[in-house]
Length: 389
Length: 63
Image (cartoon, rainbow over all chains, first blue to last red; front, side, top):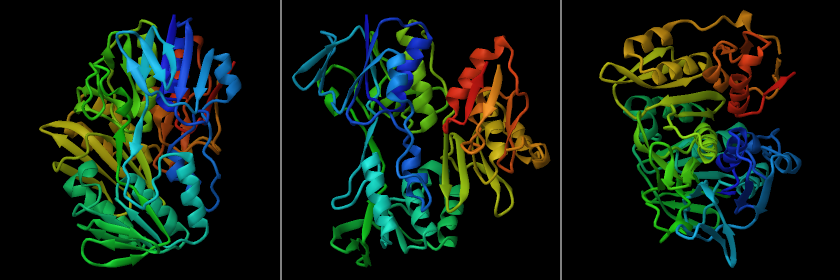
């Protein structure tokens, strides 16, 4: 029996580990488009861009660890087609038969013509080198990735223009009440935030914007989101609609599961959802691996994302796009609670890391909004009892 | 088994607390407290999940 996992990043790796942990004794083949061992992506827009940061992100596992897990690696070779009826993954002319299949091909960065993307280690090195050289920076798209790039550039004292097509950045992610508070963090840090404009053209040394202005730029980075990497699955018979559409247990077809950025599944909290977060990739990968080994169950999670904005820790759990919000805290450190009727459905905090996980647990348990307010207002464990470093 | 925290790697994201709140707690100062440093054999699966949940690989178990 052979498990084939397509996609050698976090979700794919966790699928391999999850299958083994659940008792899978068959072969495992892990196919990856990138030539690298599975590496950690969040640092690409955080530590790797820092003045004192590492040049490369850490790998999740070394080659010896993967060999010990009994995983055969096929790296630097993107899968090109899936024959569902014949149970074969094609890598160009090569055919890789499977008995069980996990799809974890992730997502591709949306591009802006002429702009650098930030998705892979090569992308991050290119951005880092430009920042090291003191680049005047324009970031297109003020989502979390774009915001982190702007933060890295400002931390070096570089001029940064952040271009956002929407009237406020992070409107969908944080909702109309909270998003302006996050935008204020950019302005306070000296970012030239331009909302409601788009990029007309990226040229040598400058960017032309839709409002007629031209911004000088040595580095232009697109932070305009990502699209699920499903092109190779066209015509396979799988249902593709902004990702591989799965059932509640992440199954996309008999003996086929999807996990990570590419998977879209019915979430009790969010409806049909595709989550591009580290924790969801890890959890879905492990879940798919267990399913491969025969442990079938619905997949549930409370989404959790974190970011560093100009030295502030921003953390978001659950469903945070709504306008029914109450903010607890002061101007510097606060947590916003999101409600749906009398239920707590989401929370977003700035520099209150002790609250967010307690709220995450409450959301998972279906707690009331009143319970959320009580937990958010309670002072967390005093610093004095923290474990010594 | 003993829970080992590499404080230099920990970024206080709290996934460990999310999985095993009886063992881990993040404070608003950003410090992670180990509420218990030893796990019973019956805690192993839970603690392995907590270790795997850490986005910065800051936790490990020692027998």
